[in-house]
Image (tube, rainbow, N blue to C red; front, top):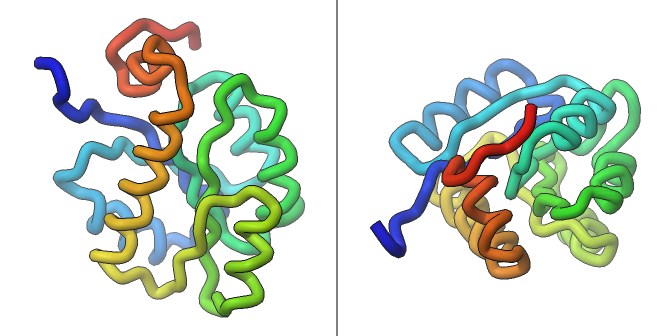
Length: 146
């Protein structure tokens, strides 16, 4: 099935339970398989073992912030796009995220159309930067070591 969109992994980092449930409901029926971790270190450990195209992280994490997560992801062979979420999202945060290499900012509480638009754009952007074999591995089309 050439051209079919494969399921890809999205990693949620530091989401409060209600936000995680909301995101899972929004992404239900989409081509996302979600995983959640609580800390920056747990996220980096997960990303060392799995190909992930998009990470959605809270602004502040118990062991750092989205900045440390972004810096840690830079050493990965195919760093995912980072979307930062915050109840206090404003133009200053958005500019900082973009200037430091993040993909976008989502304000919470999450709005369905905005989450779907931003995550899809982040996935397409990530895929356009990767060799075709890696995109297949990230979407479950090729085996990956665990």
